[in-house]
Amino acid sequence: MVANNTDKPAPVTRPLPSLSEPDTAGFWQATKDQCFRYQQCSNCDTVIWHPRAHCTGCTNGRLEWRESAGLGEVYTFSVVRQSYHPFFRNKVPYAIVYVDLDEGLRLLTNMVGVEDPLEDVKIGMRVKLHWEVHDELSIPLVEPVKD
Amino acid sequence: MSRSERNAAIVGVYEFPSRDVDGEMSALQIKAACASAALADAGLAWSDVDALYDASEAAPMSGLMIAEYFGLSPSVIDTTAVGGSAFEFQAAHARNAILAGKCKVALLTYGSTAHSNATAIGVGGRGFGGLTPAENMESFVGQTLVANYAMVARRHMHMYGTTSEQLAEIATATRYHAMRNPNAVQAMQDLEFIDIRETTTDDVVNSRMIADPLHLLDCCMISDGGGAVVIASADVAQQCAQKPVWILGSGEATRYPANGGDITTSAGAQSAPVAFAEAGITPAEIDVAMIYDSFSITVLALLEDLGFCAKGEGGDYAAGGRLRFDQPGGPALNTDGGGLSSNHPGMRGIFLLIEAARQLRGQSTAQVSSAKLAVAHGNGGMLGSRHSAGTIILGGD
Image 1 (cartoon, rainbow over the protein chains, first blue to last red):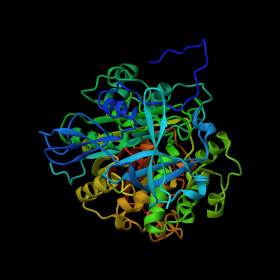
Image 2 (image 1 turned 135 degrees about the horizontal axis):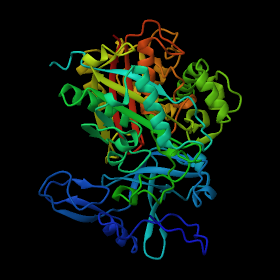
Image 3 (image 1 turned 180 degrees about the vertical axis):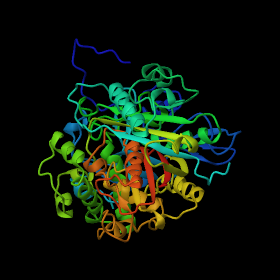
Image 4 (image 1 turned 120 degrees about the vertical axis):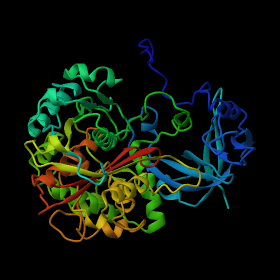
């Protein structure tokens, strides 16, 4: 349980990932350098996403970090019109997308770099990573690949 | 004993009538009130209960406290918690325990004060409690529950040409049934629905967008509520006050985001064939389909996954009114008014069993004439990511 701190209002920011969650810490630590890492098993070639310490394809797996080129396409999306979250309520309308990165993993993220998320997000459109920089890590968002 | 025999039945049901307890009752109190009433419905007593099922929705680690609260000494305790479909899982487990000779009378209860607590389930923050690895990869996105389901709808539209008007048919059929259920009408009044009446597809598609492409009337309500189900062995069932409603088959599954996976196919595609095969029937024989309607898209995808139509054909199938209780050509859908228009306190699965039992007893407010077979399919968690599926096939006496 998180104790309520009534001395000062909590800053209204995007909820940031934990850098100490054991399975995913290695991914988030690398984002400080804007490096998007994913895992692949050198024994059975399974691509692992989300990051974790064990291979789901074989029982004697050896996971190795690979770096994504950061390119992919939109698998599906929604544009949020109503949120009660203290940060996101002021961001509506904003687009949530599942992106299939070219290396074979499916990332849940937000689409930025579009004038109107209601009109400019399409299934199948090509996207690239757009890093939102924070102090200890960066957030992997996506933006359209300009023709 | 053969599994195809009628060896376990729903013998008692109760749905808490109010959807707004105005902070006057706790979730545990609702559970206990429903348990008493369901046992009375069956003609049984607390002391008959020897198996207890609980999803811990009203108290943590309920396997340690709920027997004490009810004053029971069960010899089977099962705390399967997989979200809103927990009650379909528990019904399957209760039947298995009865079949194994471990118990004779199983009690399932549910209680929630989501409305009184002003819990913004659909558009608030969302998580399963602790920080899981998957959540640590997703929580930065601001994905509301509605948006999670909306992503399934968007992909379904892209793949199969499904339209908002076709999704709206799910909501209008459900409202058609709700208007015949006095408790559903009262629920909509208590939750301050505006303009309570039978709806048209235009009403649905013209309601405000919550998360594209889902409109307000594609979404379920957030109510208070609760219910209880009593499941008994065949020898007990034959002595009960109500006609037994037999559990003929069950299936369970989970599904989660997979690289390259199809988001329009749910865990129901795995659980339903197992349940139908065990029951020895086909979807075409089903009279009543109680399908978890968190959102219109949930039902549309599940009509396909349960085998009522092929994947991608759910839009055409839902159109034209065949899902109404008084129309031919398909099962009657969510005849109590569903989560969309009658009762959704967060985990609706128990009401699927309750209304299916009422139908097979002949006690529904939108009664299908001579209903013989029903399916109750619960979807727990989130359809667009990790979720659970419990399918129960029920047959009348």
